[in-house]
Image (cartoon, rainbow, N blue to C red; front, top):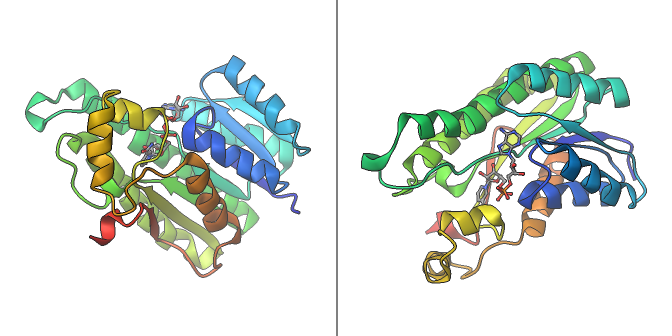
Length: 249
Ligand SMILES: NC(=O)c1ccc[n+]([C@@H]2O[C@H](COP(=O)([O-])OP(=O)(O)OC[C@H]3O[C@@H](n4cnc5c(N)ncnc54)[C@H](O)[C@@H]3O)[C@@H](O)[C@H]2O)c1
């Protein structure tokens, strides 16, 4: 068991929610963050029933003042931030590049890229003062390969990969690790929105995955916990594909 403190953004659904449970089961102090206070408090109660210390802190990751006060809240409550899982993300409006809009680009990049940058900035400030820490950003297989019909989302996740590598290089001498995970299809609300709620489209997509299925959120969560907390202390600047073999093709 451990008394380390972990922050998880976008914790109220999907992969973030599953990751919160995995960390809570391992005995971490868990700070869950999201934008809906009622759902946040309800999840905090569920997690606290597992026995550890849990705090919900409301924040929109695309707004710097909210990110800054989120990190201050973690430090005020637990004294330090050992691990951060920068998970909040949106797929935006999908469709061919010829149908894309400036507002969709700004919304997607504000959440996925600016959000990750702001979190890294304030998390690394805290971790540099501590002299230790570990961060995992949520990329995607489409942060590593192209995605026709999802170019804006794919570009935003390629940017997350660039932020991850650059941040890792900036802080490697300080004993702080920064990595990413790049999931393939994961059985969450996002995947269902991605395929427009159409089972036939979903099955067509899944047939292109060597493992012939989506990952569960719990499978992804277990890898995130391993990478952030228990993975090799020499592993940094990497993006670990959790994709049933998709990017090995
Ligand atoms: N589901 C997949 O197939 C899949 C695959 C690869 C990568 N991912 C990535 O994994 C992460 C989690 O995805 P998911 O499937 O759990 O999605 P989800 O939509 O189920 O959950 C995402 C959570 O992030 C929150 N969020 C969105 N914008 C936010 C903001 N500005 N501030 C704070 N919270 C915000 C949402 O409210 C939601 O609770 C995302 O970064 C996503 O891009 C998902």
